[in-house]
Length: 296
Image 1: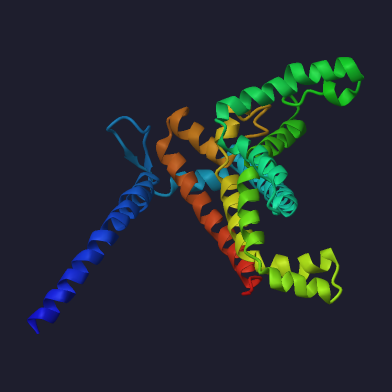
Image 2: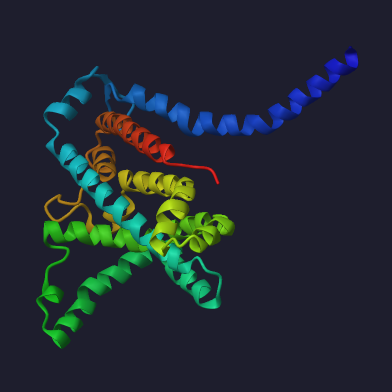
C-alpha cells in the first residue's frame, strides 16, 4: 500500500513539475492582467499617478455614446479584416498549390515568399515608402501613367488599400507554409485514385484536397483574423492613423488613448469591449471552419 502511495505521489510530483510552469505563465501573462484591466476600467486614471477616481460604468457609457473615433476604428478594423483575411488566404493557398511539389525551383520560391515575413517592420516600412515615393515617381516619369502619380498615402481610400497590400505582402509566406504542410499531408493514394477515375484537377482539389486541408484552413483563418483585429504595428510605423484618422485601427486608438491622451481607465474599457467582440467573431469563425473538417 505504501509503495502504491509513494508511486502515485511521485507521479503527481512529476506532473506538477511539468504543468506548474504553464499554469504560472497563463496566470501571470493573461489572467492577472485581464482582471487588472477589469479593475482599471471603472476608474479615471492617467496610468502613472497614484490618484485614481472611481467612475463606475462612465468609461463604458462614453464608449457607446460619445467616442466616435473608437467606432470609426472599429469600422476600419472590420473592413481591413474582411479584405485581409480573404485576400491573404486565397493568395497563400494558390501559391501553396503551385509550390507544394518538391523541386529546387519551388524551394527557392518558398524562400522568396517567406523572406518578407522575417524582415523587420522598420525595413518593410522603408521599402514601401521608397516604392510609393521615388519608385512610383520614376515609373510615372517613364510611363506617364496616372496611377503612379496618385497620392497613395494622402488619400483615405488609397491609404486603406496600401495598408492591406502591405500586410498581405508581409505575411503571405507564413500562411503559404501552413497550407503547403497541409497539402503535403494529403494521401497520394486518394489523389491518384481520383485521377484514374477521370476526375479533373479542379475536381480533385474541391472534393479531396480542400476538405482534407481544412485543419490548415482553420488555423490560417484564425491567425489571419487575429492579426487583422490586433493591427497596430503597420499603422504605428507607416500611417500614424492618417490621413484624417482614416486608418486608425482599434489597437492604435487604444494605444493613443492610454499613452498619448493619458486616459488609461478609458483605454482598458475599450480593450475589454473589443475583446468580447473578437471572442464572439472568432468563436463563430472556428465553428464554421471546424464543421467543414474531415478525416482521411
